[in-house]
View 1 (cartoon, rainbow, N blue to C red):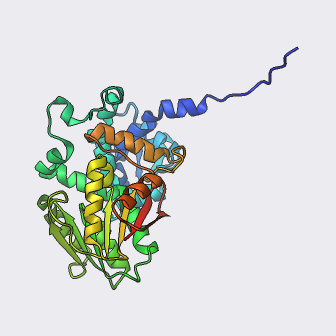
View 2 (cartoon, rainbow, N blue to C red; view 1 turned 60 degrees about the vertical axis):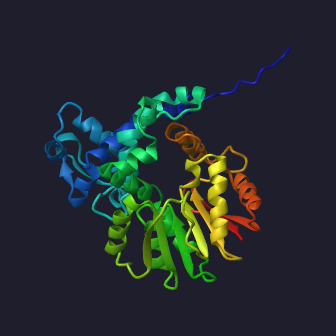
Length: 345
């Protein structure tokens, strides 16, 4: 007689991921309403929060206590007697008045990306972006760079999403054999700024389109690094890269298809001396393509947002940079799902 082994299966992961957007939208809404910025000043009662944010009384405590249950807020007391304050991570990363603020990315998720992901199925069936371009709007970079408000939000988002990794890279990478660095597509100039701040001997340049220059200059000025970080304008497809010992790109390559990736890598190769380093900071997918879920989901986000962009594994990087002439490669894990993929000329 055949015996079957009883396997206990648990539906909780399916439910957690399937309803994950409940928690996502709750956090994004709190960021958008600047709840964490308000609470960074002092702890408040529910009624105080209701009045500051202009909320209705109906779901007030459900909203605040959901944020407590998800560890974004702390609470003393309960309901009417409760006092709410920020958890340590929300206080550090989601208070708009701190330089460590990374909410720009979450603001963009809330204001733009969230509804676009509703059309993922269309994207998977057509291979076409599902953002503003779907209804005749301009491609993302044209649209963003044409509107000063959107541009500021986008530059803030790009800084927020990788700020921790730029700081980590600036501290962990061995800069002792190099003197100059140029960050291509440097947006707000933060990668160059953190490298200069943490490595006294380095002279850094951040290059992006002319519209970004005033924002980057303002950031560098605020950090007191005008003498160490030069902000320069250019189009990285049509202009040569400034000659440097290190060329970095943070979240740039994944925006483009294979042909454009190869063009940018070749330009980096040409700008470097022998022994120079090309460093790509992104959510590099593991070679087995089974562990870095965030990197794989970010690649789906590139389907939503771009014509041909995709994220890549370290072995993809290795192959494409060696084709361009680079001699050796290595990978340096940074924070969370992000790594620095390094190629030496």
